[in-house]
Amino acid sequence: MSLKNVTKPESTKAVIEFAVDAETFEKAVTAVYNKKKANITLPGFRKGKAPRSLIEKMYGKGFLYEDAINDVLPEAYEEALKESGLETVGKAEFDIVSIDENGLVMTATVWLKPEVTIADYKGITLTKKTVRVTEDEIMAEINKVRERNERRIDVTDRAAEMGDVTTIDFEGFKDGVAFEGGKGESYELKLGSGSFIPGFEEQVAGHTIGEEFEINVTFPENYGASELAGAPVVFKIKLHSIQAVELPELDDEFAKDVSDFETFAEYKADVKATISKRKAENADRETDDEIVDVLVSKLVGDIPEIMYEIEVDEMLSQYDNRLKSQGLDLNTYLKYTGMTMDALKADVRPDAEKRVKSRLALEKIAELEGIEATDAEVMEEIEKIAKAYNMEVAQVEALVSKDDIAADVRVSKAATFVKDNAVFKAKRASKKKATEETPTEETPAE
Image 1 (cartoon, rainbow, N blue to C red):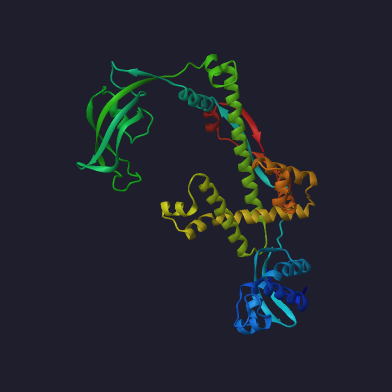
Image 2 (cartoon, helix red, strand yellow):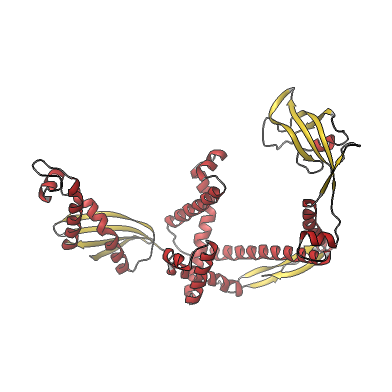
């Protein structure tokens, strides 16, 4: 087996011509014959005893060639590709040049990983992001927990008030005709929650248990169901129960009930720290996105279309897996949304292009800066994968390529390199914004 020739009809495309010698190919054909003859019956011969010459005469020599080619092709192509020194992307397309007593000659048309250039990636100017946690944000987070720990008290001696939890039957009518989706029985509705269209909950307030009444509301102009958008409707209501909501006091006992802290002050400080960490992580991701945008804009190179197509398919495969974890799949999603596969591919295409270009940019930076992945770093990544998927390290090592892991590590280190060498400038806040905000914490997020 040997490489015969390499031509490049395009800058990102190559044709590799390679050969399988007569002896190697004959062994493959013989192996196919020995495997197939057991199931072949020819007149005058017992099953499995027909000579190869007669089988080839009856069915043609090509009858054995196809399987033989499939057997020798992977190794022959791998050797030729290695000898060519080309770095390819996507799958090769194979064609037969000749097949006879001299052996097999084939071509593989391949797409090449593009040669790219990038400059001025050191000293990128970025806006320094600060993390501000306000008192309102802290209390909003605490009040969510407070509401989850509310106590409900049955009310029988007064009308429903905003803030109460009511149980109602309802049915909606447009022009005197009940409309689809407008009916519910024993529905639990917290007045003031904004769960229903504007004006609905306010009109339930003021009524007592057992009362049957009507309310008049108008659907918003941008309502999802076009036949109801902007339409005035009537709801017939029956009120079954009223519960007053009692929220726990924001004191040390509350902190002990909802956290591992002994005092409310400690709990509040922890909530503040949690919000700060979350906002810092978000700010960090925004910075990373800004860096990617800059690098993509600086990348120069002829990128083959196949790289974008592969990335689009990978993104859709990942999305399909997420849907399956929720009991759906991509085809069901398309059916429900009325979207076509082509439309979905077009929708993710910009992100796919960005991913491909950013990867190429960071790989080039790693090359220019001599960034390498150590054995320890590769093993650390393998251990992370094993932990994430609850697998043994040896299982992961058998499934993934260390070269691929090392490439990912180099890309990650290149991204860190660019970030560490960026120039961060403070954003000048307007006087109005500065007076409106009262931060309780401010930290840089680079």
